[in-house]
Structure formats: C-alpha cells, structure tokens
Length: 270
Ligand code: ACM
Image (cartoon, rainbow, N blue to C red):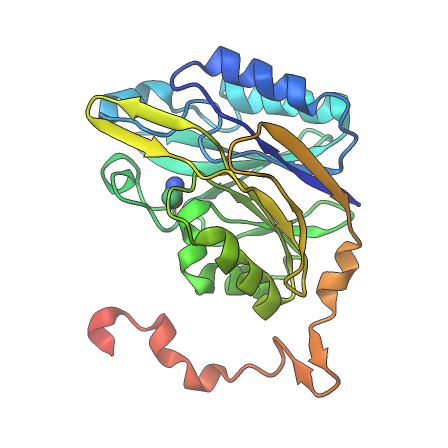
C-alpha cells in the first residue's frame, strides 16, 4: 500500500489557488492514501468569526469536498484533508476522508487550539476509524496529538494508520508522534503546512517537517521545514495489527484499564 502526505503553503483566503496547487501536486502520484494539511483550502489564521462563517463549507455538499471527490476518483486515491465545516449554525475544524468510490466521512477536531476555541465548536464525532480496503484508518487533527488518548482510542478502534492533518506552530509534535506510533503500534501520517501567515498584528509560522512514522516508531519519510512536496512510501499496513513488543508483551491486551479511571473522569470527579 502506498501512503503519503502533501506538504504545501496555502495562501490565506484564496481557495481557488489552493485547490489548483493541490491538484497539481496530487496528479500522477499513484498513491492509495494521501493526507493534506489542516484547513488546507483556506489557510488558518482567521481574525474574526465572520471570516470563518464565510469560508466554512458543508460536507459533503460544499465545493472543496466535491473537488476532493473528483480528484480521488480521477487518481484512484483516498484523500484526508482538513477544512472548516459549516453544519447548520455550527462551525467545526474538520477533516474529511473521501474515497475513489465516492463516499465521504468526517471527523471534527476534539481539542481546539488557542483562538480556535472562539471560532469553532468542539468536535462531537469522537475518534472515528474507517475501512478503506487495504487498511483501517483513524482521523485526528493537529493539536489532538498532545492528548495521547486521541491516538490510543483510535488504536483501540482498530486504526492501522492515523491520518493527521496539521498546521503546527509548536516544535514538539513531530517527536511526540514517534512515541504515539510506538506505544500504539500504528502508522501515522502527519501532513503539516509551511510558511508564515501575517494578518493584522498576528503572525504564525508553520513548521513543515511532515512525516510518516511506522509502528515501531521508525520515521519512514520526512519533509524539511519549508519545501512544498508530496512524499509517498510503500508500507504493509498489516504490520500495525501485530501489537507484540516482546513475546510476552502486547501493547493493547496488557493494558490495565482498571488502574486508569482518572483518565476518563472529569477534572472535578478526581
Ligand atoms: C493546531 O492545532 N493547529 C496547532
């Protein structure tokens, strides 16, 4: 199975150009699964909720998901991509999975970062996994990485590959995802963006370094900090089904959930 990421620098507010450049990068790649960054079609640094309202789209009816569906069908590839979602009056920072067969699935970001807490509703899908034939994939978005529970729940729900659209500004995630993969025995594709966005008196620089990590924590591919690039590696996704780290240690079967109650308790219940 060939899996990969698209690392690029979206131009804020220029959907047409962002979609055009993604199409150019994806055409002819011959991958089975590609992951694009968070908010890949619009850019990230919204200043006002009104801007998000205007930029957000319905899934699957909106033009970005329809574009992704056409691309997935033409190129016979599953694509995971981040975009602002409008659902009734609510806005979510979502990731969509589109298939070459024409179906669509959605994950809504659970752990919102800084001003996202003003603009978006906290995700209400929970952590979800989907069968794409060659593998079962699980979705999370950017800052979800800092809660190890996100990747753990995806692994418990059978994810072989975690698809992780990101717009990373802190320098920790790439290293942390090595541990997430090792402790859960899964692959992860972190697709980050590059470049600096400056709007009003705010400025964010994104760290690139998109990567694909294997179930033993091995880095299978990594971009540098500012290149715009597609990287694809061939993997055997079934390697993520073997959770043994020694003949006597199984990552999931040996857990002691009876000792972990605080993890699912609310703060005021501990
Ligand atoms: C992030 O969640 N975009 C850092």
